[in-house]
Image (cartoon, rainbow, N blue to C red; front, side, top):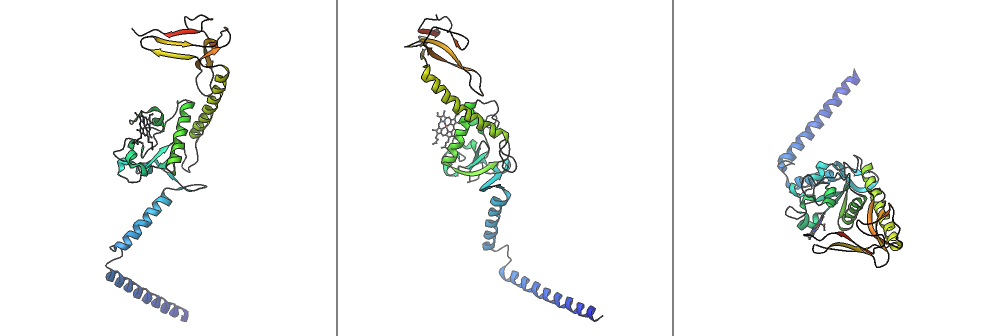
Length: 274
Ligand code: HEM
């Protein structure tokens, strides 16, 4: 009983304390005209919200401090069309801040269509409409993949790297997908192919060639015999070049040009335009 009474007394004291606190808060609110209507606090809340948006809503890339993973919708908010002063674009799923080049990427800039999206394919195709501006890079050659990696390197060098966009090239956690790994592997192959071709060109030089509407096309060798020389490049269709071989031999891999003798040192490849 005694303890019940003391409990009651205790609660009553608590209630009194609370009501004193409530009335002092009310007084303070009345005095300051309300917390929310104070411009200083509005600024503080705005700054905190912007910080939270950048650092929490656009989640960090695991293991890579300072980088964010954006959804395509978030990336779109940084497009010139959205009226944002901060401009982002993505190449192969990597996001760059291009705000410093407003003249190029701003709403009236010649390349504003690249902002707010990942339009990787258009960096190769040069098709800058809705169909061309896509991240679908399937079916491009290994040389094209290398071109894309070079564009990505360019943005790393000239602009600020922001992070990754979720989609074809990076998953929800910002980890690379098979699609980006395939592009990178293709690009490496293209570099190796180029090196191999250079080495081969040293051994079997490329033919001289000329073309004009008046005379048509012609190929010739100062030393050796012109042959359509096939090179099997990894990851791409078999390609050929005209090479000057030292002997008159010819086969599937080094073919004669149409209407050209095995011992000829020059061949007409196309007739003059009529
Ligand atoms: C596949 C075709 C093409 C692509 C993907 C492409 C892409 C680009 C990109 C991304 C930039 C901005 C680079 C930066 O941030 O500094 C740029 C700049 C530029 N491009 Fe292209 N371009 C293409 C073709 C052309 C062609 C054919 C011309 C000329 C007839 C051209 C002329 C220029 C010029 C003059 C600039 C500098 C822009 C400026 O300073 O205002 N581009 N290009």
